[in-house]
Image 1 (cartoon, rainbow, N blue to C red):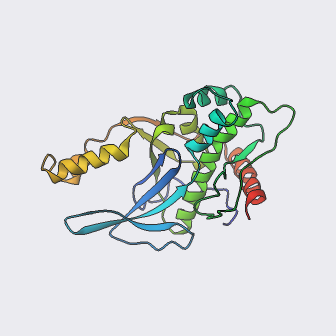
Image 2 (spheres, rainbow, N blue to C red):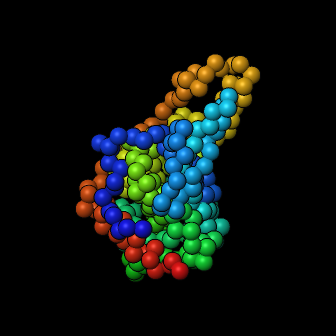
Image 3 (cartoon, helix red, strand yellow):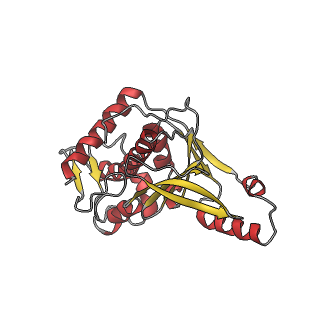
Length: 252
Protein backbone atom coordinates (compact mmCIF):
# COMPACT_ATOMS: atom_id res chain seq x y z
CA UNK A 1 0.00 0.00 0.00
CA UNK A 2 1.21 3.55 -0.64
CA UNK A 3 2.61 5.36 2.39
CA UNK A 4 -0.01 8.09 2.47
CA UNK A 5 -0.57 9.72 5.86
CA UNK A 6 -3.01 12.50 4.99
CA UNK A 7 -6.45 10.88 4.76
CA UNK A 8 -7.74 10.91 1.20
CA UNK A 9 -11.32 10.83 2.53
CA UNK A 10 -11.26 14.29 4.15
CA UNK A 11 -14.75 15.49 5.20
CA UNK A 12 -14.86 18.08 2.41
CA UNK A 13 -15.03 15.36 -0.24
CA UNK A 14 -18.34 14.09 -1.58
CA UNK A 15 -19.51 10.89 0.08
CA UNK A 16 -19.80 7.92 -2.26
CA UNK A 17 -22.22 6.12 0.06
CA UNK A 18 -22.87 5.14 3.64
CA UNK A 19 -20.05 3.28 5.38
CA UNK A 20 -20.33 1.29 8.59
CA UNK A 21 -17.80 -0.64 10.64
CA UNK A 22 -18.82 -3.38 13.05
CA UNK A 23 -16.36 -4.01 15.89
CA UNK A 24 -16.65 -7.45 17.43
CA UNK A 25 -14.00 -10.17 17.76
CA UNK A 26 -13.01 -9.11 14.27
CA UNK A 27 -14.16 -6.00 12.44
CA UNK A 28 -15.95 -5.54 9.13
CA UNK A 29 -16.12 -2.24 7.29
CA UNK A 30 -18.76 -2.09 4.57
CA UNK A 31 -19.38 0.76 2.13
CA UNK A 32 -22.67 0.85 0.24
CA UNK A 33 -22.06 1.26 -3.51
CA UNK A 34 -25.77 1.09 -4.40
CA UNK A 35 -26.50 -0.50 -7.79
CA UNK A 36 -22.86 -0.39 -8.87
CA UNK A 37 -20.58 -3.38 -8.33
CA UNK A 38 -17.18 -1.77 -7.75
CA UNK A 39 -14.20 -4.03 -8.48
CA UNK A 40 -11.45 -3.13 -6.02
CA UNK A 41 -7.91 -2.59 -7.22
CA UNK A 42 -6.70 -2.42 -3.63
CA UNK A 43 -7.46 -5.88 -2.27
CA UNK A 44 -10.91 -5.25 -0.88
CA UNK A 45 -13.95 -7.47 -1.48
CA UNK A 46 -16.78 -6.55 -3.83
CA UNK A 47 -19.92 -8.12 -2.43
CA UNK A 48 -23.72 -8.05 -2.32
CA UNK A 49 -25.05 -5.99 0.57
CA UNK A 50 -28.68 -7.10 0.16
CA UNK A 51 -31.40 -7.78 -2.40
CA UNK A 52 -34.96 -6.55 -2.15
CA UNK A 53 -37.71 -7.17 -4.73
CA UNK A 54 -35.15 -8.34 -7.26
CA UNK A 55 -32.97 -5.23 -6.96
CA UNK A 56 -29.42 -5.86 -5.82
CA UNK A 57 -27.47 -3.39 -3.68
CA UNK A 58 -23.71 -3.88 -3.71
CA UNK A 59 -20.97 -3.01 -1.25
CA UNK A 60 -17.22 -2.87 -0.86
CA UNK A 61 -15.95 -4.67 2.23
CA UNK A 62 -12.76 -4.87 4.25
CA UNK A 63 -12.17 -7.23 7.15
CA UNK A 64 -9.95 -6.96 10.24
CA UNK A 65 -9.17 -10.36 11.74
CA UNK A 66 -8.34 -9.19 15.27
CA UNK A 67 -10.29 -6.30 16.79
CA UNK A 68 -12.01 -7.32 20.04
CA UNK A 69 -9.74 -10.38 19.91
CA UNK A 70 -6.83 -8.08 20.78
CA UNK A 71 -8.68 -6.92 23.90
CA UNK A 72 -9.54 -10.51 24.79
CA UNK A 73 -5.82 -11.33 24.57
CA UNK A 74 -5.01 -8.56 27.04
CA UNK A 75 -7.52 -10.18 29.40
CA UNK A 76 -6.94 -13.90 28.84
CA UNK A 77 -3.39 -14.03 27.54
CA UNK A 78 -1.64 -11.33 29.56
CA UNK A 79 -4.01 -10.89 32.49
CA UNK A 80 -3.79 -7.09 32.24
CA UNK A 81 -7.55 -6.63 32.75
CA UNK A 82 -10.28 -8.62 34.47
CA UNK A 83 -12.98 -7.94 31.86
CA UNK A 84 -12.95 -6.45 28.38
CA UNK A 85 -14.65 -3.24 29.48
CA UNK A 86 -11.72 -2.49 31.81
CA UNK A 87 -9.50 -1.69 28.83
CA UNK A 88 -10.91 1.82 28.48
CA UNK A 89 -9.95 2.97 31.97
CA UNK A 90 -6.54 1.28 31.76
CA UNK A 91 -5.80 2.87 28.38
CA UNK A 92 -7.05 6.23 29.64
CA UNK A 93 -4.57 6.10 32.55
CA UNK A 94 -1.83 7.23 30.14
CA UNK A 95 -1.75 10.19 27.76
CA UNK A 96 -0.89 8.07 24.72
CA UNK A 97 0.76 4.79 23.74
CA UNK A 98 4.22 6.27 24.29
CA UNK A 99 5.53 5.03 20.97
CA UNK A 100 4.34 1.46 21.62
CA UNK A 101 2.64 -0.34 18.71
CA UNK A 102 0.80 -3.64 18.91
CA UNK A 103 0.24 -5.48 15.64
CA UNK A 104 -2.41 -8.11 16.52
CA UNK A 105 -1.62 -10.57 13.74
CA UNK A 106 -2.50 -13.55 15.92
CA UNK A 107 -3.97 -15.40 12.93
CA UNK A 108 -2.37 -13.29 10.22
CA UNK A 109 -3.61 -10.02 8.74
CA UNK A 110 -6.85 -9.46 6.84
CA UNK A 111 -7.66 -6.78 4.29
CA UNK A 112 -5.96 -5.07 2.61
CA UNK A 113 -2.79 -7.07 3.46
CA UNK A 114 -4.06 -10.67 3.21
CA UNK A 115 -0.94 -11.99 4.91
CA UNK A 116 -1.83 -15.30 6.58
CA UNK A 117 1.74 -15.91 7.76
CA UNK A 118 2.24 -12.57 9.54
CA UNK A 119 2.46 -12.87 13.32
CA UNK A 120 1.79 -10.41 16.11
CA UNK A 121 4.33 -8.20 17.81
CA UNK A 122 4.65 -5.42 20.36
CA UNK A 123 7.19 -2.80 19.33
CA UNK A 124 8.61 0.39 20.80
CA UNK A 125 8.82 -0.81 24.41
CA UNK A 126 11.02 1.13 26.83
CA UNK A 127 11.53 1.02 30.60
CA UNK A 128 8.82 3.67 30.80
CA UNK A 129 6.23 1.41 29.09
CA UNK A 130 3.49 0.09 31.36
CA UNK A 131 0.21 -1.81 31.26
CA UNK A 132 -1.48 1.42 30.21
CA UNK A 133 0.64 1.90 27.09
CA UNK A 134 0.07 -1.70 26.01
CA UNK A 135 -3.70 -1.34 26.51
CA UNK A 136 -3.64 1.89 24.55
CA UNK A 137 -1.63 0.26 21.76
CA UNK A 138 -4.19 -2.56 21.56
CA UNK A 139 -7.05 -0.11 21.01
CA UNK A 140 -4.94 1.88 18.57
CA UNK A 141 -4.18 -1.25 16.53
CA UNK A 142 -7.86 -1.52 15.59
CA UNK A 143 -7.95 2.19 14.77
CA UNK A 144 -4.94 1.95 12.46
CA UNK A 145 -6.31 -1.12 10.68
CA UNK A 146 -9.54 0.79 10.08
CA UNK A 147 -7.45 3.64 8.66
CA UNK A 148 -5.80 1.24 6.21
CA UNK A 149 -9.17 -0.09 5.05
CA UNK A 150 -10.49 3.42 4.40
CA UNK A 151 -7.24 4.32 2.67
CA UNK A 152 -7.73 1.37 0.32
CA UNK A 153 -11.35 2.41 -0.33
CA UNK A 154 -10.21 5.95 -1.07
CA UNK A 155 -7.70 4.56 -3.55
CA UNK A 156 -10.66 2.85 -5.23
CA UNK A 157 -12.33 6.25 -5.50
CA UNK A 158 -14.83 5.86 -2.65
CA UNK A 159 -14.73 8.59 -0.02
CA UNK A 160 -17.22 8.60 2.88
CA UNK A 161 -17.99 11.78 4.78
CA UNK A 162 -18.35 10.01 8.13
CA UNK A 163 -18.12 6.56 9.70
CA UNK A 164 -21.01 4.78 11.41
CA UNK A 165 -20.00 2.21 13.99
CA UNK A 166 -21.56 -0.61 15.97
CA UNK A 167 -20.58 -3.73 17.91
CA UNK A 168 -19.21 -4.20 21.40
CA UNK A 169 -16.15 -1.97 21.04
CA UNK A 170 -18.38 0.95 19.99
CA UNK A 171 -19.24 1.41 23.68
CA UNK A 172 -15.63 2.46 24.36
CA UNK A 173 -15.50 6.27 24.23
CA UNK A 174 -11.71 6.42 24.12
CA UNK A 175 -11.68 4.06 21.14
CA UNK A 176 -14.33 6.18 19.41
CA UNK A 177 -12.28 9.35 19.91
CA UNK A 178 -9.12 7.67 18.62
CA UNK A 179 -11.02 6.61 15.50
CA UNK A 180 -12.09 10.22 14.92
CA UNK A 181 -8.56 11.52 15.53
CA UNK A 182 -6.72 9.11 13.24
CA UNK A 183 -9.34 8.89 10.48
CA UNK A 184 -10.03 12.64 10.61
CA UNK A 185 -13.72 11.80 10.25
CA UNK A 186 -16.83 12.25 12.35
CA UNK A 187 -17.68 8.96 14.07
CA UNK A 188 -21.39 8.27 14.59
CA UNK A 189 -22.47 5.79 17.26
CA UNK A 190 -26.13 4.66 17.25
CA UNK A 191 -28.27 4.15 20.31
CA UNK A 192 -28.60 0.49 19.35
CA UNK A 193 -25.04 -0.76 18.91
CA UNK A 194 -26.18 -4.26 17.92
CA UNK A 195 -27.10 -2.88 14.51
CA UNK A 196 -26.70 -6.15 12.64
CA UNK A 197 -29.41 -7.86 14.68
CA UNK A 198 -31.54 -4.71 14.60
CA UNK A 199 -31.21 -4.54 10.81
CA UNK A 200 -32.23 -8.17 10.42
CA UNK A 201 -35.31 -7.51 12.56
CA UNK A 202 -36.18 -4.45 10.49
CA UNK A 203 -35.92 -6.40 7.24
CA UNK A 204 -38.22 -9.03 8.73
CA UNK A 205 -40.62 -6.20 9.57
CA UNK A 206 -40.39 -4.99 6.00
CA UNK A 207 -41.16 -8.45 4.73
CA UNK A 208 -44.26 -8.86 6.88
CA UNK A 209 -45.56 -5.37 6.16
CA UNK A 210 -44.72 -3.67 9.46
CA UNK A 211 -42.71 -1.14 7.44
CA UNK A 212 -43.63 0.11 3.98
CA UNK A 213 -40.14 0.93 2.72
CA UNK A 214 -36.46 1.25 3.59
CA UNK A 215 -37.13 4.94 4.18
CA UNK A 216 -39.46 4.00 7.05
CA UNK A 217 -36.66 1.91 8.55
CA UNK A 218 -34.06 4.63 8.04
CA UNK A 219 -36.28 7.04 9.97
CA UNK A 220 -35.83 4.83 13.04
CA UNK A 221 -32.11 5.56 13.24
CA UNK A 222 -31.01 7.45 16.34
CA UNK A 223 -27.49 8.66 17.07
CA UNK A 224 -26.26 8.19 20.63
CA UNK A 225 -23.04 10.20 20.26
CA UNK A 226 -20.72 11.68 17.66
CA UNK A 227 -16.96 12.13 17.90
CA UNK A 228 -14.91 14.68 15.95
CA UNK A 229 -11.16 14.80 15.37
CA UNK A 230 -9.09 16.74 17.88
CA UNK A 231 -5.58 15.61 16.92
CA UNK A 232 -3.28 17.92 14.98
CA UNK A 233 -2.16 16.78 11.53
CA UNK A 234 1.59 16.48 12.40
CA UNK A 235 0.84 14.25 15.41
CA UNK A 236 -1.61 12.15 13.37
CA UNK A 237 0.92 11.72 10.57
CA UNK A 238 3.68 10.69 12.96
CA UNK A 239 1.49 8.07 14.62
CA UNK A 240 0.36 6.59 11.29
CA UNK A 241 3.97 6.47 10.11
CA UNK A 242 4.87 4.54 13.27
CA UNK A 243 2.07 2.07 12.57
CA UNK A 244 3.18 1.54 8.98
CA UNK A 245 6.75 0.93 10.17
CA UNK A 246 5.50 -1.65 12.68
CA UNK A 247 3.45 -3.38 9.97
CA UNK A 248 6.46 -3.70 7.70
CA UNK A 249 8.35 -5.55 10.40
CA UNK A 250 5.76 -8.33 10.81
CA UNK A 251 4.58 -8.82 7.24
CA UNK A 252 5.95 -11.66 5.18
